[in-house]
Length: 295
Ligand code: GUN
Image: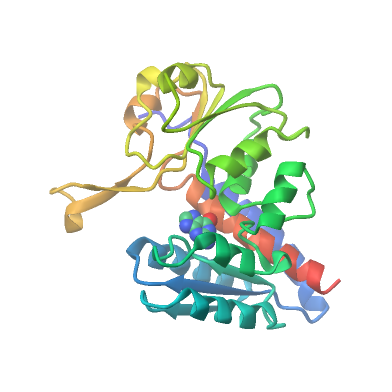
């Protein structure tokens, strides 16, 4: 199978992290070690894996991290009390509450409680508002920021391109649409945001120069939905049953990769595309938070 059109997220993430290494050196020279707290509630298996990868990358870069694992039955009040403590802990420059949270905890309340200057996830209303307004002093959510970085570092021109984003979630689709439409050199795209209420999604997809699939439906994007030469970014992480696989299931993206790769101009593998970039941009946001807090 041809691999020439792959966008290597792992390699680009390594590049971003190498650049952060230099900024870490400058912080170290000033006696500053960036610190990041992870908070996980319950035993969601995917969240365990994600937080584990983020911890490992912190260790590789020399970022201090601590992880708070709370039981599924934790009340919203208990979680908020922990966040208040982390908000005032001077060792910590960033706080990340891993989604999803149990249904009895209001996500919006939780993300509003993390101080905006420690909100390296970019989910606080102040940071979301800044993103929409084009105010770059805020933190941009890691997956959308990572996708833009993938495009830019792969030499893909976004300016004037028609970007179609599938999925309107608060973590990826909505902030990515806001990011891509900003009047900036590395943005300036015409954005169509499709979702479950969209009529003729396939028709919209076929007009995309850049197609980002982030709706969480296994193999949704098929060959007939992609314009020849289009750039395809697969954000999906879906566990599907597969009796032949170890454990009886395997992970697949939102794109039918085997069918779409021969048609796409460029395409992200999955895994090895967006995932590593999300982590790299989290590290970037954390280093930036530490720089800003100690300037
Ligand atoms: N769950 C899936 N993606 C993310 C993310 O980027 N941040 C957090 N906190 N939770 C997530």
